[in-house]
Length: 253
Image (tube, rainbow, N blue to C red):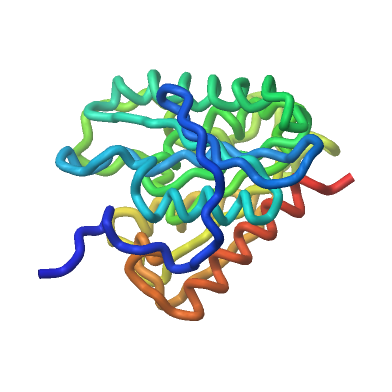
């Protein structure tokens, strides 16, 4: 019998970070003094109902350790989605986690990023429409970027592709200078699930048309969840590239 996904080991083996559990938020803390850049890691939703807390999956503990290894303080909030209405609650929790980080004396409050995974990609819209000045970069790994066919009605707020639309008084395709927002680091799996791949393809096409800053990391042979399912050099390189690209955005002058 194979290992269930949430028990599968992470594709990399970073040194374990010190982990602090503050209620529904885990902090993966880097070593060293001073203020660190920080990232909110937004795990995939909805999770399998029988799965344990996603903060305890090797996948997300691995990402927390990988960021801490590079001097970034990572926060992973516990998120639960059982219906589209729960997206309001988890969106508020992600925003609250960002503020928790900004208030932490170990964090540089002007150098934060967000990293969304899988179904949590539906939460991207808020940050694309109205990014705060402290948001230096956003990453999305095999994200769901539009509600799936057959779902109950979902608030347009949770349709990230709609967040790329030009304002009603704009007719040009290029964004105004300085209005492009933070760069999005988008990791695409070549063997993506057939229900998710079209949402990524459509989003990417519109983002490029609109001139949205986009850095694409392709994993041609990777599956959805490749960091747990595909222990290959291609997977390891993709994870490192996504992390390093996001950190470059966080630490740029």
